[in-house]
Length: 403
Image (cartoon, rainbow, N blue to C red; front, side, top):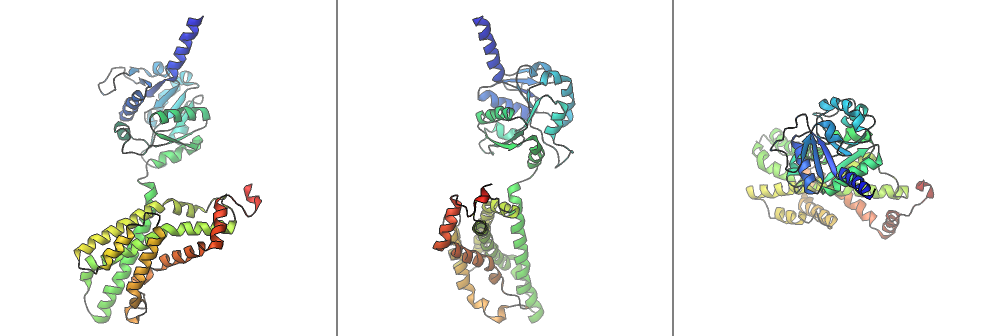
């Protein structure tokens, strides 16, 4: 009896420590190799049981039905178009955890997500969406140069926990995203190129185009019409080099502006336990990207400074900007704004520099930074700062918000 119980426990332990992978493609092979490294037993299910030198040593390869019986966790490293054969294995897959790692060729390619489609085909299985944002290349390279986040969603919490445990043993960071309804969003996420950079990129391109054409109108077109002089040679270097610091300073101000708006929202509501508006949430999430783009424009400004003989103030401005990524970001913004004011004060009040009643571009670049600095000065006053600190530490003006 003791021997039989020991054999049963050994079988259960072996089954729990074994992971089945359907499919022997690039991702299946890479995942299998990584699972072997961390101590799992790996079984491959395939249409052909012929061994291939591409598979890692130490794995078994067998038909789908036999491989599915060897493990309670089955990773489907196959395309959605090939899911239909699973209906013939539904009696074997009952109660199994099916990990869907598939992605589509385009956003919202099908009415339902691949994971939901799989759950409809095998209704008695427990479908979990995971690993679709991890590439075969990142698994092969040891996850040294790739993101370690793994988004997991599913309707069964125990199944998600098992998959998240596997991800942790692989050295990844699993993030529970909720039910299987989120699977479509996760599948679309893998198709977006640098999703967190899209909004900052559009903002920077828009500001660059606006200030470039603004300088083109005031410096080239206006002079050509009024004075008959051709200053088009300024477009390639001088105007471009003027746009870079203006956009850089504006982006730097946009990094700190959402935090100030959020502070005023919290002061108005008297609590921190309410979500910010969606547009403010999205703005705050891309502050890091805005700061990095602003730093990139500063470097471009420095490079252009080496091309043409420009005053020493450029180097001084750039050196001040280099500390913008530290805790002295607001001080950096203050120095850069003060420098622009000191350098261009004579342009601001001289009517000769107003082309068609349009102020110089440097004047426009000071609107957002000055607004941020004035609002920040208001927030750091002792009476306002104490109240804001209390709110951010959990104090609420009215207990009704706790509901």
